[in-house]
Length: 377
Length: 110
Image (cartoon, rainbow over all chains, first blue to last red):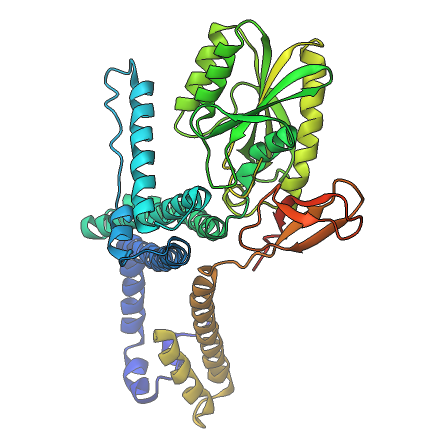
């Protein structure tokens, strides 16, 4: 092993040669102090660099989404005034959730709040895009929502980063650094979603709506509850009532209200409800894989699921779920071929479910859940 | 920055005539590590900036004729949607063409 004295440091050679053991001691003490005393600080500084870089990327992503929103609003909506101030106001919008100390009746409170939020949001978007038709307006609303989501993610991450920096709390910094890869992935997915919304392309989440639209094609359709269309068809000698959100604009409708009203129209006649939706896959699973289960397959805050569960329980109707597995990225970016192809498999699965679980002449509700952007009926 | 300074120092030591082969090896090692660190840092910065781009998707529309076997896969155009009618079939001239599906090609990148 080489001693420090053997090293050559140019003009310092003589000094180091004479003071070899002193320099050895100083180096040892320096390294001990550096790694034991300041090890955590150094690590924290590294994490903070990572977060800082991530934050810069998030800022870049949200700016891109905002620019895309602005460009699309100008192209489609033909605003008469500069839409930037109004878009900035929309970017900062928030929703105060109801008090849950007394949870009784909270679902209807939530439902009311969401209705008001949606109505106001759409009206605000209409104001900045007066020339947009209803489908374009829905797409623009979705686009502004994607930009809003990116802006909110950025603000939250920046808040915790600055808080961690200010308080020098390693726990805040470590938590943030650990979550950062998932947050980045989700942000990139939202950016992809913004692009799909700007062009009106179907997204992975729309597979449920796509299946329902295939069932109701060329059938007489009617509008039921808010933004939901229904058509009757037959399958394996059963009467099938198919429903989906009204497309091709970006819309999820209120399938909970629609299913409830159909069940109330057909009291004692409906033998089963089949819900088709996209579901998040676990890592390692194949996208486009079809799976079936029991229960109301519908995401969101839970108000729509509550309505379906309540009405189905009241009338003792079984609810079955057929899901198509996909990742969060695939769910909100343009529909992949594997997911599109899964639509036919889902229809086959519905047929076998109907054959197994109902009798000829029965009425079955098939609800296609999800965002119907780019999917007509 | 430190890596660049150390690397520079190492290169001057290697080129120096007063440095023996043993020391040249050590300084060479220092220079290699410093260079590696600089390259790694630059690569990380590049990767960070390249990840924040809008991923260009190739989106396709499948056009079908319900009467004959005509099927066409075309690039997605703004305003396309599933079940949009696309005029009369160019093959049989009877059926109305419609968009049966819209999909994107593989999202894989990097």
